[in-house]
Amino acid sequence: MIPLIKPFIGEEELMKVKEVLESGYLTEGSFTQEFEKKFAKYVGSKYAIAICNATVGLEMVLKCIGVTSKDEIIVPDFTHPATADAAYLAGGECVLVDVDLESRNTTFDLVKNAINKNTKATIPVSEFGNPLDESFYDLKDEVFILEDAAPSIGAEINGKKVGSFADATVFSFHPRKILTTGEGGMITTDDDELYEKLVSFKKFGEKHSELGRFSFESIGTNYKLSNILSALGLVQLDKLETILKDRIKKAEYYNKLFSETEKVAIPNKKNGTRHTYQSYTLYVKESNKRDFLIQKLKGRGIQTQIGTYALHRENAFSKAKKIGELANSLKLFNNLLTLPLY
Image (tube, rainbow, N blue to C red; front, side):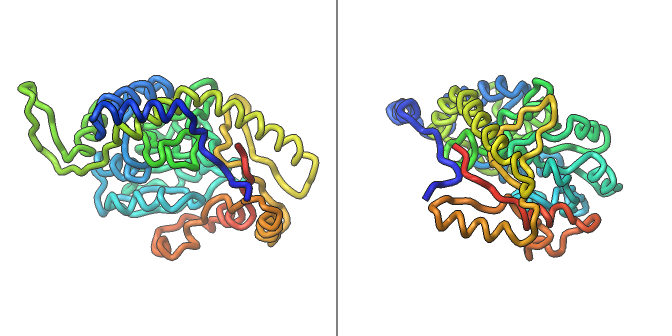
């Protein structure tokens, strides 16, 4: 079976992990700190905080900005459940909004129309490696923007990388992502106060004193990223631009082939942006054909799958507040086809 994606893991990663094992220091330490510094430099943010996965990263940020049970978090309906899960796990209420049919991302207008006195934050998703419209970040004057960029490492808007625009941004290093550490993630931000809260929260709420002792002034937990996984991340980060360029080249070849048929719509890419194609998705224009194609391709040994979920159709989110009909989200849920790309 030809899989959707496979990690680019080689001898360099093995040697870096061996270095960690031989050091005898396996938990979070110098390798993680180096990974954080290099990641922040790569995306152009002031800070980067390594965490054990992206879902807890979203939850952490929401908790650290003080989300309560009275607060609403605006989330695109077309996304992986993890995005909305974080809103609930942080103690807030989820509000589902629609997305744009072409970009597959939510928009400035869709989120602005959902903002009210109870809105604490919004979690837009730069879906499949396609960056948000730059104008979306104008909403920072009205609401805290926590970008779920789980699939979008290396994506750019006018030469600036995703991870440097929002109030805080979260990336994933799951094996289906372009940079992988097996499990893991990274939060980026320029906010000094938020950075201090996040670092403390992921280490049980500890605060380091000038005397070298720890004190615990707030509640926290253990969301650290080990030196072993960070070693993988360091090597992967060095390879990232090579991986991305190769991936984009293959996606552009797909685009050329599929632009010759009117039966599907290729991924949308706006001028001045870099789409990294974490998932290569085709919109199948004829209803009830996408699942037929999945089965046909499976019969030929080719793994494909849906794009992602329309959350309002899932029982877990049946009580979430919904804005509008969420029609585009439903169309994408029913008609988007993800093809192999590596």
